[in-house]
Amino acid sequence: MAIEIAAESPLQEEVRALIAELNAALLELTPPEFCFHMTVEEMAQSDTTVFVARDEGVAVACGALKRHEDGVGEVKRMYTRPSHRGRRIGVAIVARIEALARAEGMTRLVLETGDRHPAAWTVYERAGFSRCGPVLDYPDSQWSVFYAKPLVAEAA
Image (cartoon, rainbow, N blue to C red; front, side, top):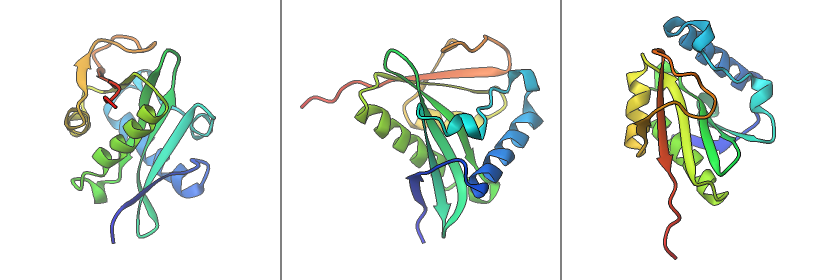
């Protein structure tokens, strides 16, 4: 069966468990003061849309679009369970995030990820993101890698 991706509430127990796994994985690689987690409750706010990938109904991956001022969207909370890595689910979630951002008229997507996450870098680079300096209000640190992607309006 194909992986299905849809916008869902992060307040479901199964999605909470996925986010808990993400938080634990990040804390294994990055000091807590440089982990910029959104809580599930923050993810449920109206400025954020959460996409959940399901395999036969089981949540296996997630990612979110957080809206900022001036047409900027931020890719947040990207995670794929180890059992489903290598299947380009992350790439598909980023594509959904980008499609929503474009549909809402955003002009730029940005993100912060860790310095020990080469698989994440591959996902973002395949999706057309380029490394850049610090974005939004993130501090510049050895633990962070920043990416941005302009969203140019397609010609009619």
